[in-house]
Image (cartoon, rainbow, N blue to C red; front, top):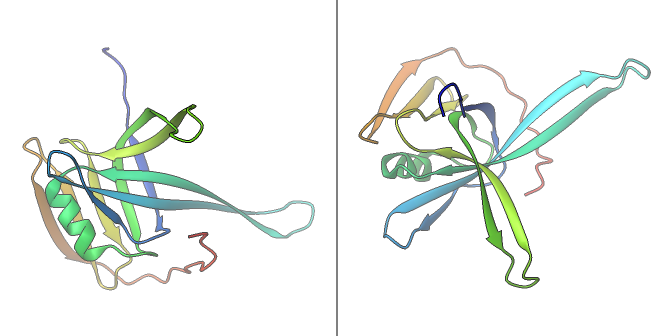
Length: 152
């Protein structure tokens, strides 16, 4: 369909260590649980409020899966660009149809960037041949408060 766009941009923290699985075809896939938070001050009480959304990230590119497995851990801050996808599956116990919405990191128009990892940021992107490239550049270290109340 001409004139449509399916693109997701997120910055957040991992709620758990990445999960690496082998697919039937022998290739690896990485699954990430990413938390994004929004905070504000309640106008009536002056109390600080926060809302956290959880996102499922699925990385199919073999090169990116290797980098994810090596470098990403629970609490890591990342930036992802991907595509929104909803898949349907059947619950084995109840027999009911279930749906999962995920952000897919695959193809030439996706990327994953590690943020806040000290004095360097790593950017990993997919190109048209789905190979991973890695660029390191110096950035000033920022102070990020990591909330240990992540429900994982």
